[in-house]
Image (tube, rainbow, N blue to C red):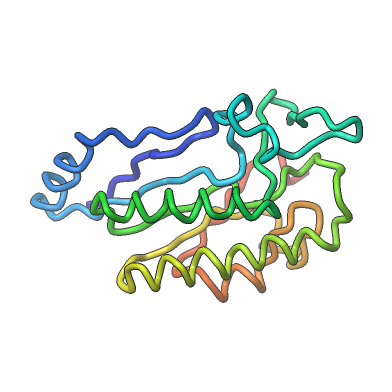
Length: 181
């Protein structure tokens, strides 16, 4: 009785107005409707907002191994954009927002790793507070890198279980066989 709809993927936003009616239909059938929102892995604004992205040592836009760009988690404008977008998603009638890629890329060599968990932890706090203030009944969940279930302090990507468990209603560990040798 639940359905997950991708409303923001690494290629950008997919939130057509017609989705509101579809969500109403799903609710009439007693379905729980979840919006999946890819947070920092986002190649859609590189032309429009290049200053929002992670950079290489030579100040070019950084790309992961799959050729995707990542928004800079410590950029205040990026955070504002993501919070405001999430509020729009709430207004569409979703029961839950599920955040994915709410972390640094695992192969990025930018600012010191120790600072990353502070940035991501602060963002966990900010987005939760602002969205719960906006709509107290909204359920917030996060997809977490699987290995942080056993390595509680993941400095490389900034996700720490001790931070995530404080802010989200539900956590889903993304367990990939390729990550467990």
